[in-house]
Amino acid sequence: MDLHSILPWIQVVLSVLLVGAILMQQSEGSLGSAFGGGQAGSNPWRTKRGLEKQLFIGTIVLAILFLASTMLALFI
Image 1 (cartoon, rainbow, N blue to C red):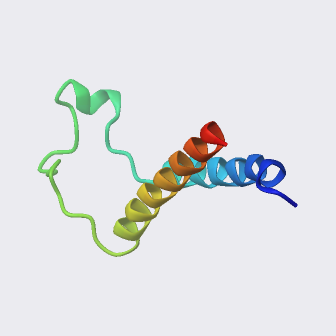
Image 2 (cartoon, rainbow, N blue to C red):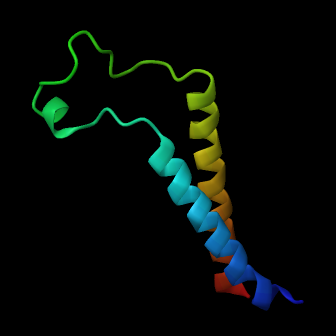
């Protein structure tokens, strides 16, 4: 197998993983908080910890890998 035949499959897998990682992240940016009706006392600049931080970093890594595979497909 050469790279031309396997690269689209790599991109499909990376895109599915990236979408899943994005959807698993906790979102507090609802419409109510956009107009000041968010949770009382919540800090929008809180620190990510534990699994949430690992998921955040993993999402960044998946995005970089997807970008790299796209650039590779563009140049070969």
